[in-house]
Structure formats: C-alpha cells, structure tokens
Length: 575
Image (tube, rainbow, N blue to C red; front, top):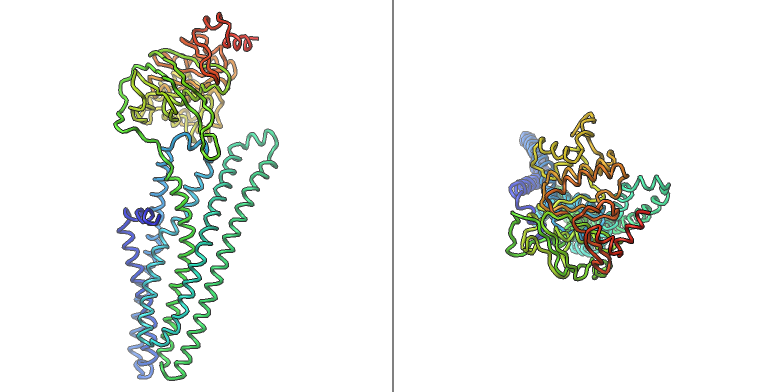
C-alpha cells in the first residue's frame, strides 16, 4: 500500500525534494534561537557587550525573514505538489473506471464512486503534502534537539526522554482504533453521496408522487449512519489528542521540575536552563507534528485504501494476439450462445438468460427481436459489442470470433440507439459529436439533417450551441432521440442496434423517428429490439425470443400465417 502511494511522488520528485530541503532549512533556523539565547544570557549580558547583542538580534531578524520565505515555499508549493499527486490519482482512477465492464456498474452505486474519487482524494492530498513534511521535520527536530540537549546536560536529557516511550506506546495503541473509525466514516459518506445522487436524479418523480418526506426519511438513514460513524471517529480522536496532550503536559512539568532541581544543585546555570526550556519547547513541537501526522495518516490511507479497492477491480482486457477490426461486411452469427448475469449478493451466478442460442444474420439484413420481457433481447444486443462476456458459445463477425478483435475496434463498428437516450451536460453539438469526436461542424450538421433534427435546431436562438441541461432535461423525448440517431449517423457503423428506440414516444413522433431510423438502417446490418410489432413488420427477419429461447422466426406474413406466439402478440396489439 505504502509503496503504491510513494510511486505517485516520482513524477513530482524535484518539487518534493525542494519542499523537503526548505523544510530542513526552516528546522535549522528554529535551532538557532535557543543557542543564541544561552549565549546572550550567559556571556553577552554579563560582559555588557551590547554591540554583539544588537548584531545577533539583526542576524536573527534576517534569519526569520529567510525562514518566512522558506515557509511560503513550503505552504504554497507543498500544497501544489499534493494537489498534483491527487490529480494523478483521480486521473488514474477515472481512466480505470472507463475500462471496467458493464457488470461492475450494474452492482455499484454512482454516488459511492464519486465519493471515492472526490472525497477520499481530498484527505489523500493533505497526507501527500503534510505527511512526509511533518514526518521529516519531526525527525530533524527531534534528532537535533536531542543531540543538543545531551551535549548541554546528559542526565537531565535522559530523565526527560524517559517519558517519550510512553507517548510512542500510546500513539501506536490508538492507531488501529483511529484507522477503523476513519475507514467506516469513508464508507458511510459514500452511502450518503449515493443516496443524495439517487434522490437528485429522481427529484421529478418524487415531486410528481409527492414523496419528498419518504425521500427525506431514506436520506436520513444514511445521514444518521454517517453521523454515528463520524461521532465514533471523533471519540477516538478525542481519546488520542487528550491522552497525548496530557503526556505532553507531564513532559513539560518534568522538565521544569528536573531542570529546576538541576539548577538548584548548580549542575546547570541560568542561561543553560533557559536554553534548555526553549529546546524542550522545540522538542515538543515535532511531537505535536507527529500526533497530527498520525491523524492525517489514518484519514489519508483510509481514503487511499478505498481508492485502491476501485483500482483492484478487473478491467476489460483483450485476448492475447487480438487485432484491430478494419474491414467488415456485417455478417453476424450467434453460435450456441449461453449467458447469465451475476445476480447473487456475493457474485454467484444467476439463472441463464440465454442457453445454446443460435442465430445467423446476413450482411445488410434487418433482424427484429420480439417477444415477452425477460427473454434476453437486449442482452443479446449487449453481447455483440462485448459489454458482457459469454458463459458459453461464441459470436462471429464475417466468420471470425469477436474475441479475436480488440474491444475498441469492435465497438467502433457497432452503433447503438437505445430507448433511454443519455445526453451529457453540454450543447447539442457536443452530444452529437460523441458519434465522432473529430467530426467537423459540416459533418455534425449533415448527421443532424439525416436525423431530421436540423429544422428544430435552427429554431433555437443558440442553434447547435444550445445547452441541453443535465441528462438532456431541457429537450423532449423525441428531440433527445433524434440526437441519438444523429450520433449514429455521424459514427456511420456497419452494424446498427436499435434497442426499443421508439417505444417511449407518442405515435406522431414515433412515425417521424421511424423514418429517420429507416434511413439510418439502409445498407447496414441491423438488430431491432421492439415490443411494438407494427414498427418491425417490414424487417427482413423476425425472431420471437422468450426465456425458453427462440420460439419461432421468419417474415411477418409467415409468422402470422403460422398462428404461433407472434400471431398472438400481433392480435393482442391490434385489438
């Protein structure tokens, strides 16, 4: 864990070394004041050497000005280094997140992921800056103070330092408790963020059904759990800080008592006693830094551990020897395909959604998948671009197993228009450009025209720069669907998947969208998932899929004439 954490310092090593060097010089500056004080009291004042005293005061002033510059560098660039380190961590976490399979997102809350990437890394930033600095400064100050104190009076120093092992033991014994409470706090704030994100996304539903009190109750469950976990953390911190403060007070009391006794016995003079008290003050300062470091270490490493849990999730990988998919005619074959979701609480396998399914789709053919819900229609479409991995069988493109291609090149050949169109916060242009981020404005406008979107865009004051709102909330369902179709036109894939692309629209809008989809499907191998059978009656091939597998298949007229399940579904929708 610590090795992985330390690796993030490597790209910023020069800044880290500069920060530590400035910290070392700042500590050295602190060592001078007690030494000068001893000389002033013991030598310069008794000898009435006023000029030397003034010279030392001027020298100390210059040293403090220099120290102020060092502290500025430490505070500014040290924090900048911490921010850059956590920026790298967030970058790596986000990049890893983008490469995780669909199955991971099926079982993970969005708010929890946001908490790990945003909240946890804030504590890591504090640790990455202050942690090494506090530890280094403490070691320098403790070592320097101890050596100087030993040189001044070994017996008194050993007497005082006898209390240090007790302080170390207490801090070590409390570390485990602090770690547990800090980690639990991270877990609970993740749950609060998840519930908050869920409630905000569904605020229109809660308003429509007047369930705001219910949402508040749900939120308060997580909120109270977080408050309890935070309270336990503060209890552990209170025990830790009050205990260490008491030991520090005892240390000062012992210093004053033992030092006074040694002075009373004439074993040290007044100047040495004064310098000794100042050095002990310097000695207690790094101990306070170490105490602060323990808290930062628990909070920061708890956050880093949760981040590493995310990084430990297995990403999607290509098989050894996988090549890029270039030319594609579009013939698709599902050969004895078996698939099931991991549905259990511990990731155990659920019931098969597809079992030994075989289906051949010719290049340029439009195949419709129909049937009752739960038959695996959408699942079959998700398997083609390898959003999920098969449990058995294989899928081929032009006779080649799709696992022989890289996922990136495979997905570039597949376009998808779904029932629920997700739009990113941004403009209409931005959202269409997801089909091809390198597309020119002319290409984007051509895609919009093919999707019958351009006339609507021209009525807007900002045109293609119109802001769509979060998840496209400022647009109607039909307008969002046209943007999704424009994306697919811009991508220009040889294989097209239309997954309930018009089921949520009214009849008039559906008819308009259907014409755009017909243009989009021309010359492409197309899989259409539909519950409304009237939208697929002209498909080249219709497959009736149930939880038992393929019940029947053929053209619209053939299936009606056979009087099977398709005919029954058609009759039910027509009446």
